[in-house]
Length: 482
View 1: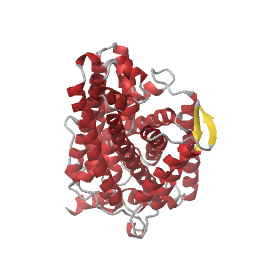
View 2: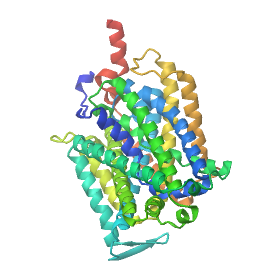
View 3: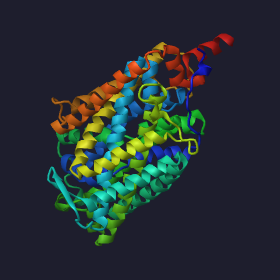
View 4: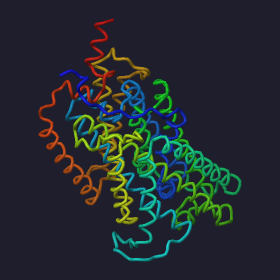
């Protein structure tokens, strides 16, 4: 059977340069900097936390450079899934795709409770309809509905087309930057360098902060997921991907600096939500805290939006390649979106709100583990593809490629170690349970797909994964004809 006989759905190209940059940056900037920055400063000191993020950003850039070479080389939905297929084949690709999907869904699910928490800071949500208590947090129907309503809005936004979602992402990202500038300028004009004490705590404290960096930078890797929907020169994808990481690094370091300058240690430690409380203290008025929460709300929504897009595109690509049920690969005839995959993630995100605010840490830690597994597989794929296909057309070729790949593998292994039981930030039992449930579901899907599509041969998988332009057969035929 020739490749023309295989049905392969494709997505519309609508994203421009600014859309892609806002997509990457906005997805990285979520809620963590608002809630967790106080802990970073407490553990590492103000300057120590900034150093930790600078080192962590450099390490993440090594991983990002491997993505920067691979994405324009194989600009297809699925990103990590596609790269790993080229490097490892079916099974390695399946594992990579399933784990990065877990990471995206986990962070997207984290955003629902975060949104309700942020809204409650702005306007206290009446405690109506007590449901249950999870890990010390009382969940009420009224609180839960705030997160569910926003989940539904974002699901609809993504259902009706990526262009509407990216326009929203661009506007919201610009407003977040304005909010960040308020913190920095407010801290400089009304804060004090004395508030930054302690500047540095210890090397262990800096390492403790550095361990969380991968979770804070998750988001640049969603850019490959939408590569098939970008209407820009391929070489631009690499530049935008690296720029988005650098922008996020500057953002986090600036927020730590602003927090440290704004309020003394005793105020930061007593704050329920450190960043807005510190700014309100510095400026002498509660309204400035509300301004920062508005920026945080936008950060939650841009991150949330980006992970819905990223997760739905991986599910779409897996279904298109007959790795999971084909319904996940259905493209809406009018909107051109992977509609079922979007709805599937939307339902999970809505259900996560029922877990309450205590689930935030569980979801972010478990999803971070899935992220670094995918980073490890991508870094290895980068090295394998370099060895197997050195002549493959690369719009961007990473300088000192083998060295970059080896460092990226080492970085991924280091962060993987930190999440293991013997590591300094080992996952707790409930977090491992979340990981294992997802793995068990994956095993079921893997076995099902192998039996359901047992008659699909390697050439069909190749075509479904890479399409007519990037399959190895097409590239080989092109070389022969040339």
